[in-house]
Structure formats: structure tokens, C-alpha cells
Image (cartoon, rainbow, N blue to C red):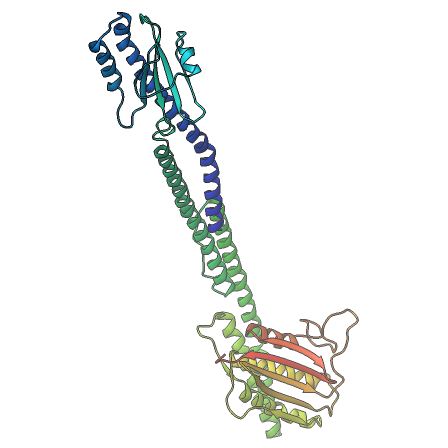
Length: 436
């Protein structure tokens, strides 16, 4: 934008100056020629008035001739137009000159100026009253004398034009810098808002239009903050309501006679309470102070071991293929745990009993992949065109949030989420490693 504004200003200023300076340069050339001609004419008239009385008196002799020569010699000099006096008998006093048709015309009593074929300009002034016929004063201007000072005037005009163009570019650059600075400030504010910093506000600078946009952006940020605050409060209230049923389940588990069963159910209830508390905590503190990481192989082994007793009750074979060493990924541990629980829970809920499944962790460059595969019938094809991973979509009467949780976890971490049948259902989540 700034460069385009400079180009537009430079081109416009150059065109305007060209429209003004080109006629002005031509006028300067014409004015210089007219001025030189006027000076030559004045010089010729002075010579004619000075030698006129001498020639009119019919004076002869050395004294009269010397006076005429001295008069003509006084108007000649280095860099001056060449002046001559052509007497009626053909004698030439001063600079050599030829008797041409123009001189013969001047002897009829007409004073005029003409331009000879070889360039320049000639001024002819007749001397009236000479006793032996009409003499003619001949003043010749060369091409250089005729346009003396034109080049200097042109250079001055060119300098003025260049200065005006540079001044226009400087003003356009300052204006462009102001516009670009205000626009970039709005862009930085928008980027901060997009990154989750709802305290970002745009500074109202620049032209009225950009100030209006800044005000509207600030109102939008405030409105988003209000809506998110209300949403977080609703989520926290809903999670808080789940505490009472969870407490009832925990008390019921304590009354079971089978200690092993009681311990297992109590562990599940404790995990539920932990999840509720985590929902409340996240609802009240949505912005993370630092980017959390999770050990993907460790969580894969831990959650598979957690679900292993239920899988064995359903006659399922479970396989875990994960590296022995740590593999940190840029995902919060609780979100990764909830994602893996949702994927394994889908296998246990939506495939026939006895269907085996496998959890695999592998790396590809700076990317870690989590695969959950089963040997069931695979994802069903829906008649309405919705993908089974779409939010709220379920073919078994559930909420349809399990696969959407996994998808959102991968995408928020900068990874990818894919599903396919091979031939059973397979879900692949890609996460950037913490080092990558």
C-alpha cells in the first residue's frame, strides 16, 4: 500500500509538472530570443541615431570616417552581436557583411528583423537623411546569442520540478506510513484476539475510516469477552451440578460387598470427579500461562491399562505398540487422556463383544501419531451425508461428541485428525512433538 501510494503520487506529480514545465520551457526559449532581438534592435537604433547626423551633413574626410568607425566599433566586442554599417556606395564599416536583398529592402526606409537560412537572427535599421543615399545598420545575432541563458533556465526549472516531485514523495511517504502503521496496528490487534488475548484493544489512529474500524473491533472484542465469560460460567455451573450425582455414586460404591468391585467403581467415580473439577478449573481460567506437554506413549499405556479389565470382560484382545522412551507432544495431559478415553470407549460401546483393538504410537519426523484401530465392521455410511466424526452425529444413540473431542484436540494442537475403514474402524491423530 505504501509503495503504491508513492508510485501514484510520483506519477501524478510528474504528469502535472510535465504539463506545466514543457510549455514554460518553450516560453523561456521564446522569451530569450525576443529579449536578445530587442537588445540588438536597440543597439542598431543607437548606431543609426549616432551616425545619422554625420552622414546627413555630407561630411567627408578622415575625421568623419573615423567618427563613424569609432561609433560602430563601440557596439562591437567579445560575445556581443556583430554590428556593421553598410554605406550607400557599398562600403562596410565594422564587421564584414554582404549586401543582400534584405539590405536593399532596408535601404527603402524599412526597419525589420529576419532569420537567415544559416540560423540566428539579423536586425536591419536604415539611417535616414544621408546625403549620398540611405545607409543601413546591420546587427547579426548568432544562434547561441539568440538563446543565451535558456539552458540555465531549463536547469532551474528541472531542479524545481525535481524538488516538487521529491517533496510530493516525502509527503506521500509520511501519509502512507501513517496509513500502513494504523492498518498494521489493527492487524496486530486482530491477531492477538484470534490467539485468545481478549484484553487486546485497537488504538484509534489514522484516518477517520480506520478509527471507525478500530472502534468497531474494540466493541467486537468486548462482546466476545462477554459471551465467553457467560459461556464459561454456564459450563462451570453445569459441571458443579454433576458433583452431587458423583458423590452419590461414590457413596453407593462404598456400600458394595465385593471389595474389588467397590475399589474399581470408586476409582471410576474418582476419575469422574477429577474430570468435573478440571472442567470447572478450565471454565474459570481459560487462558493457559504456558504451553503444556504430555508424554504420548506413557498416556497410551496408562489409559489402555485402565480400560483393560472391561475389555477382558468383553472377551477383547488389546494390543499396545508404543515407544519405551518419552515422546512429548504439545497437548495438555488431561485433554490427551480424555481423547484416548473417548476413542477406546467408542470401541467398547459400538463394536460387538469379542472385537479386538489396538493402540499404536509412532513418529514421523517432527510429528507423533496416535492410532486406535479395531477389527469391527468399521464406520457406517450415513444416508444424510454426515460423517460419523461430525459433532453431534451418532449412530448408536450417544451424544456423538467422542470423535469430535478427538478431532478438536488434534486441530487445536496444530495436528490432524483422520478416520478410515481398514477394514475395521481406524482413527489417526497427528500431533507436533514438543521439540518440533
